[in-house]
Length: 132
Image (cartoon, rainbow, N blue to C red; front, side, top):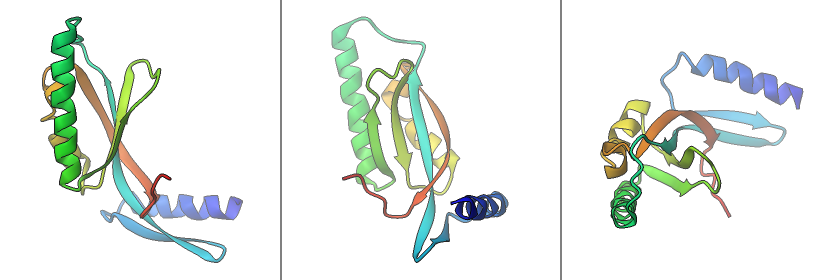
């Protein structure tokens, strides 16, 4: 286990200077292809309308935007948090850069109106990982 952690740490350090999005990691008899994604938190923004009709319309527009990004294949996972406080949801993008993900999500009507704000960073996961 310690050997695996050290191997991963060394790979991580070397990857911070390389603009690649995938690498192989071997643990025992198994080789994992690790892939870099953009992980984005959606947080409560400063403009939270109390009007339920307006909020419902904004949610409809927000979901339509997420569906459009998912159809493009660039948004690979999305969902809200339950009892997350200011953390409203998460998005995982399969794109080349943070800037690309931020530019895409900046077009979300809920972000444009400051109902939601974004926080994005790189995340490494095993390529092809799927939830059951």
